Image (cartoon, rainbow, N blue to C red; front, top):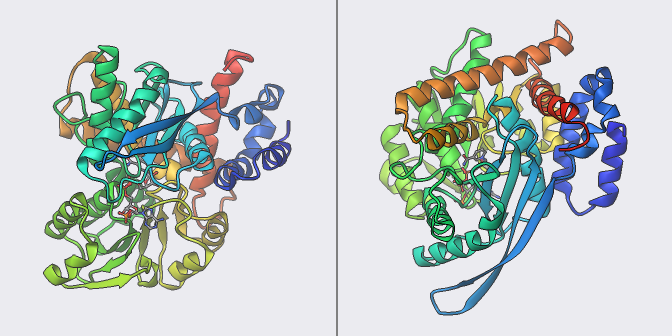
Length: 448
Ligand code: NDP
């Protein structure tokens, strides 16, 4: 089937899955040259095969709240492709979770994981459970109930989930405990565990740090660096605060963070002391706006961070958080680099706009791959029952991100005009990730 026919078919089949269709289109438009020059890809119908998950498991979760009421949520695990390794991808707990969101995330994850060069397939899962306002006991009971259903379908060589929005070290540890309890087995079935019982150092920091390492590589191409660059960060979660921390440590001036309630602006920049305060505040689920009373700055209720002049934007909150109007705002405010810490934070129109305006743009599947890369290193540490040091893992993270950057750059340069003003990382990353998976599928014949 031709790429466009696959998209037409998906649009008919899944009209209620806009995020998934958006992610598929983004890949399709950038791989057409490679697809056309490899007859095996269309002979083996690779694209159609890769746009249908191997399977989607859906289940009901019953759990008891603090008042003794039985609550019901829905859970899913999309096992998209295990062509080059066990299914691997996070679990998201958020009321907006549905099959479309998980299919888009799982589809992206296939190519992101392939880009790391580690043997990991793609998957994603989660629940429409809302952790906000829940007590610790409720979170624990929910995590236990969730994994009591999911444990039948995961395993260290089969499917290895991790965290994502609403799922951090605490939740992963609860789920790991229940898995261990049900199976009598201590294995690396989940990553992002607590350090001290199988977790890897630098896993918590890896996605945000990795995004900034990717940015450093982009700047390096232009013999530039982060010193005194003004940076706008969105979100105040795991990815955002570690991206802010790493950028600040490299002498950038981080001007904003945000959350679903608004944006925090500090013209003096967030230094380590302020970032530590923000981490603690979010950990205790207290309002960001209390920062102003302690450190000064400005709280902009209900607003996003893109209204400020800056050199770099790091959208690190959630999908489609930057639309075309906001992309225009960034351009008008002088932003020259956009690096996606979140998955698909720019809408398709926003991506077209920033590429047209020659803003250097790095897509999430390349720039935020540091987290899953260290998850891959956690899996290998668990397999050989050894721990590696922070410094060793940080070096490895640097090397993996540089490899991703360089391979995406090489693939982009091979197919874009010599005088193009920007490196087309989006095309390059999609080509590299897709080719690695497609070549495996061709070698397997018609089995996945
Ligand atoms: P967290 O739950 O730790 O943080 C998410 C942050 O984004 C919070 O500050 C949250 O605000 C904010 N946010 C979420 N939804 C919205 C919204 N609709 N509008 C405004 N703000 C919003 O998640 P992570 O940091 O782990 O994940 C962030 C992004 O990075 C996601 O796209 C995720 O898929 C991606 N990612 C994460 C990886 C990881 O290792 N964790 C790996 C690779 C990608 P509030 O606190 O108010 O809810």
